[in-house]
Image (cartoon, rainbow over all chains, first blue to last red; front, side, top):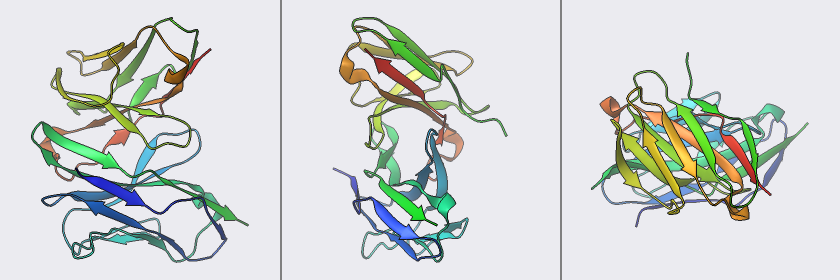
Length: 114
Length: 115
C-alpha cells in the first residue's frame, strides 16, 4: 500500500544551520505531496505543498521539490531559527476507491539551539 | 480567518467512562476527518465524513462512533474508555471542491487522559 517514509529524528541543529529532512513516498498514480508542521501544543499546520512532478513548494524559507524519478519530497531551509523547532510531517494525498486520503509519515522532530 | 474549532481542549476520564469530542470545521468545508495521535506518534486516521455520510474508516475501535450533523460539525463518541485511549484527538476539515490538492486544516486537538 501507499506509504511515506521520513528520516528519523530528532534532528538537532544550531541557529543559522542548513536543514534537510528527507521524505520518500510509495504510491501508485500521481499524489499531491505536503509538508505539515506541528508546534508544541498545537495541531498540524500546512507548511507547503506540491501537486505535480518538478513543482517546488515554498513557505517561510522552507522549500521542497516534487521529484517523481526518486519519489522524494525533501524539506530544506537555508538558515534555521530557534522558532523552527517543531515536528515536521511529510504527507501524500491521492484518490482511492473510497475517496481522497491523506497518509502521513512518522514525523521528524527538529530542535534548533541558539 | 476562521479555523477548525475543537472542544474541549482537555478532558480527563476514568476507565470505562464515556467521552464526547466535538469539532466545528472551517465554514464551507464539507469533509471532516478524525485522527488520533499518541505521544511521539504520527496522526492515525480514525474516520471521515463527507456531507454527513461516513466516507472512510480507518483504525477506529468499535467502542468509538462518530457522526456529522447538518451544520457540518462532527462529534466523536468514545465509550468504555481504556488507558490506551489516552492521546491527542485531532479533527481536520477540507473542501471537496478542490480535493486533489486541498490540504487538511487541523484543529488544536483535544487531549484525552484516561486514568
